Image 1: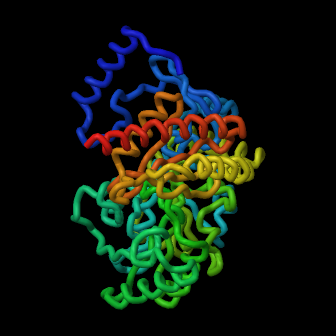
Image 2 (image 1 turned 90 degrees about the vertical axis):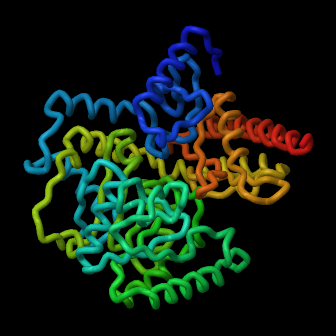
Image 3 (image 1 turned 45 degrees about the vertical axis):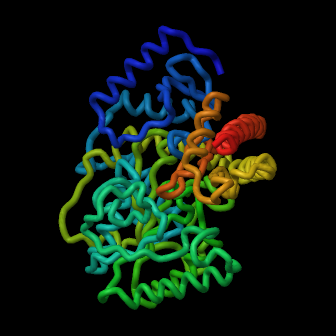
Length: 449
């Protein structure tokens, strides 16, 4: 990473001060000295001080294919030269083109697609559809979950760190299963774990008042620290849900588009009882453009008895970008690349962390990898350790994320799906050094105290 100078450092400090003066205090920013990213190419980005970084977080799993992907920038430029905006009150060819592709890829029969501008809005729409269709405001959600920052999405978020209010338009009942390696069922085998979680679901339903609208679940919990249940859990849940007429909403905002390598959608690891009734998506499909959406079978999607539109959802320019991005993803088999390179990366990281007392677990699938840190003395979460590694990795020229429930003690690694083997090795080497530096420093501090 290149060095900084006094002039650029002064400009950075001025921008940070302006940020603090005009934006909310609760708007999270990474790093003790926050960075301004000015441009990117491939899997790399540069900050305003000229430092170059290998990007292992992709703007929160959003730069899915590559920074400045030529096909996407060309599609945006050409569409911008024709027309930027019309709204859904008019026929929109790029929206229909992308909807056809998404409907086919979703695996949902007789699918209908509604585009939004974010994952939060997509989950809001899914909740609206489910509650209207089932005539109930009762929702099942997973513990440790995260589904967005709107009022209704916060109401189904089982993660204290991202839930600023207990007020909600929904009655939410939380069930076990999102976290495999901790909680009352952690010591069970996978089969026993699924059986125990199904029993818990049945017990929770016994406490519900009449109809329950839906279960919403992330196949792999994103903000929660890239945790996931054994394959097949949601298929077992689906058998119970179907008996009660309850809908299954699969939140694919972070797991969609082949990121997990083994599957195009996260729900396909749990497909023993068929596809979900509703699927939500966002982030990677736009490669940075604001695209979210909902896919549902026609009976569910068409249940609303009032007029509706979207001013910005499905705009010609974002749809053109999404279609170009999706075409590139499929034509270059980036799902296969995520499986191959992600498999190498996770094994490399497991080897690097094998002798480190402060690492509890390295987990993940494809290019969605989490490293959970603990305090070696107490065995409890180590948010301080996660922050220290985040800083050390940046100093080494690598950008990563963090999460893991309200304790934020998991390092989140999610590079663009075009990551090369050489870049995976480079990133793993930087992260290994960052882990050793940060954890050894923390260990020395404990010894001194």
